[in-house]
View: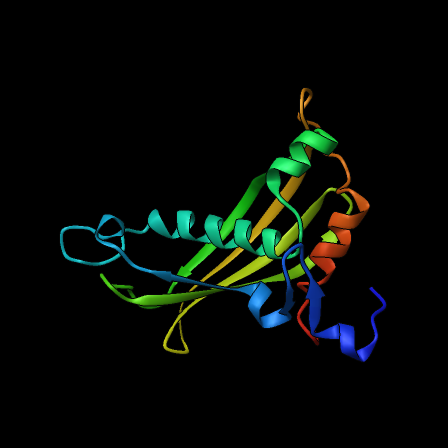
Length: 158
């Protein structure tokens, strides 16, 4: 994606200009419903938090999953995922989830989602999203502007 120096770190959304950092990072406070009896975040809850972070990231880039479905007849599904839990999260922790593009090709892309608490990495997720056509659920390329949106998530030097 060709961008001037000014555009490199700022992307226009439907509401205002956001920096790349604002687009990629999602803040989330751990609530009681996210924890087990010991006050530790239950392992499956990380998937829901990651989903919210991805959805918000797409919205901040100017797209929505509803738009993908209604206008293009396409859906996104998780094909595969790898999770590395380094340290637990606890009730009332403020967590940041940074979403970055690893690679994109045709109908799929690989994303990295890094959970951190006070700057310390606590969990890392790598996942493959696949774009499917509704009805036959066969892989189909992302719409062109969605490809550009995902390109905006590429990490420098990645």
